Image 1 (cartoon, rainbow, N blue to C red):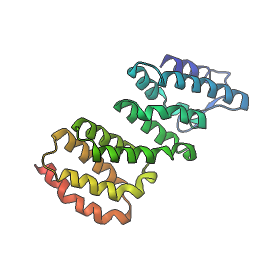
Image 2: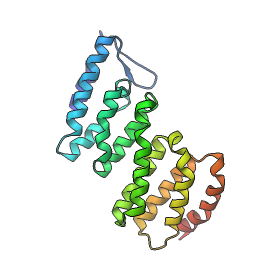
Image 3: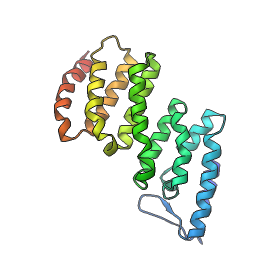
Image 4: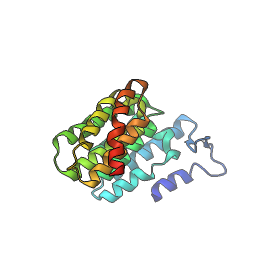
Length: 212
């Protein structure tokens, strides 16, 4: 965290040519300056994401705030985050949220990997029978939908149907039911007009769990 703060401090002094836009993103003018900042940020991400300590990897992802988005959206920086998609659960969630955020600036680089994560989660839900793993897959799936709703929209109907089928299984543990309901909420929020029939079918099941 200190490294990232020190990095930004050099771009926010009185004589700095950098500026902060309306979204709080630090914009680095000049090719030489931008390249230097990108190299430093890329080195920090590459080293931290590969660190042996899971907490350090997670803190690194969480410290990459919107202030870095101008540089984070560069192809090399985006790709440096990809290994975290196969990390521990909380690190996967942080990586998904980060990639969804920077995808608004560089969709060509960040978006292609997110459908793979979504399909991986759907596969884990189908074939993993350990409740903890299923709960984690559901949480990551919901995070992908929340982070990149436009990308996820073609999958919403199928994901809703699958979630409702699982909710209909009354043997699901409470933690799994909670995760599924949260996921359904995200899916419904980003459903399109073509998904209204599925959304109506979801209602009865969801209400039944809420009243149970």
